[in-house]
Image 1 (cartoon, rainbow, N blue to C red):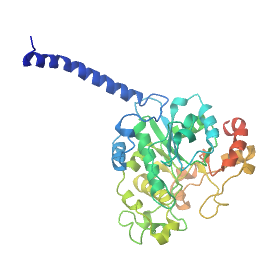
Image 2: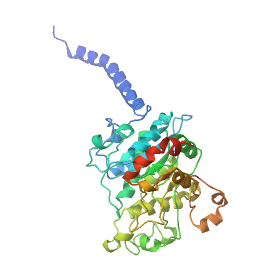
Image 3: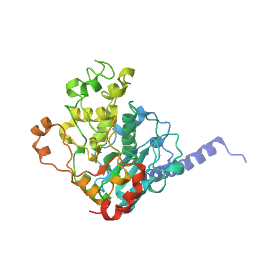
Image 4: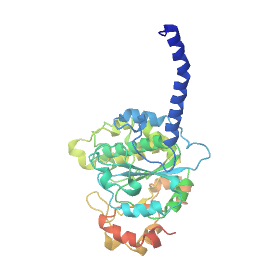
Amino acid sequence: MSPTPLTLLCALLLTLPLAIVFTINTDLTTITTTVSPPPQLQKPNNRFMDEEMDDKLLFHLASRLNPNPSPAGAPKKLAFMFLTTDRLPLAPLWELYFNRTKAKHLYNIYIHADPNLRYDLLLQGVFSNRTIPSKPTRRNTPTLAAAHRRLLARALLHDPANYMFALLSPSCIPLHSFDFTYKTLMSSKKSFIEILQNEVGAWGRWTARGETVMLPEVSYERFRIGSQFSVLTRHHARVVVADTRLWSKFKLPCLKENIGRCYPEENYFPTLLSMVDRRGCVPATLTYVDWKRGQHGHPYTFQASDVGPEFIKTLRGVRPRYGDEEMNGSDASVIRRNDPFLFARKFGADTVGALLDIADDVVLRE
C-alpha cells in the first residue's frame, strides 16, 4: 500500500529533532576546535577566516567582541603579529624562541604577507599555517597601517584569550626569552606605543594629503608620531578596529609631491590612542632601533659583525624613550618607568648565524 500524505508528514516530523541535534553538535564541535591549544591558523570553513571577507565587515565583527580576554580565569595569551612582504629570514631564531618555552599554549602567531607568496614553501615550522588573508602593502601608503589593523582584527576573532598584541617585522629579533616577555607584558594593564608630539617634520606629515584635509577630525595640535611597532592591549586593539572616524582621514592617499613625508603607519595609531585613551598607554615602543646611524628614512641595519654577547646585553640595558619631555613632565609615573626592550630591529639576513651562536647562552637566557 502506498504511503498517504499524512503518514509522510508524520515521518518527517519524527526525523526533524534528530536533524536539529546533529546540527547543534556539529556547530559546537566547530566552535571548540577553533580555540583549542595550540591554536593554528588553518583555513577553517567559517566566516571569520574567509579570504574574501571585506575589511569593513572584518573590522565590524572584531569590534563587537568582548574587550576582556575570555573565558574568565583562563590564561591570557600573547599574539605575535608579523608584517612582511617576503620570507622571514630570521625564522630559525624565532623557532628557538618559541620552542624553548614549555608554555606553548600561551601564544599565537599571525603573519600578514604578500598574497602572491608560496607560504607553504617559505613559512615552515612554527610559522606554518599562520598566514592570515592578506593584501599587498607598499611604503608611503596607507596599506601598512591597514595591514596592522587587519592583523589585529584577525587575532581578535581567532582567539578570545588573546590579551596583548605585538607587531613585529621580518627584521625583528627577541632580546629576551618568551617566558620573560610574556611575564613582562601580562603584568601590564597598558599598551606600549610611542607617542610623540613635538617631532621635526610633523607639520609636513599632517599636510601630506593637503593642507586642510585632516580637519576637522584631526587638528594639527592632536596629530602624533610614533613607531609602528607597538604592543596593544585587547581593549586598544578593539578601539583600533572599531575606529572609522580617524581612519577615514588616514586611509586617504598622500599627494604625489608629498609622498616622501607620507607615513600613515607611524601617525594613525599614536594619534588615535592619544585622543581616545592617552592615560591607558605607556608612550614608548619596546622595540629597539638605531636611528642615529640610519639613512634616507630607514634605521641602521645591524650586520653579523655587530652581533655578540655584549651587544645583546647593551641593548637590554638601554632605557626606552617615553614620549616628549613635555609629556614626561606631566606624568610622574612615566618618569619612574624603566621598561626593558623586548625586541630589536633592523637585523640583516646575514646575522642569523651569529644570533643562533649566542641564542641559548645569551639571547634566550635571563
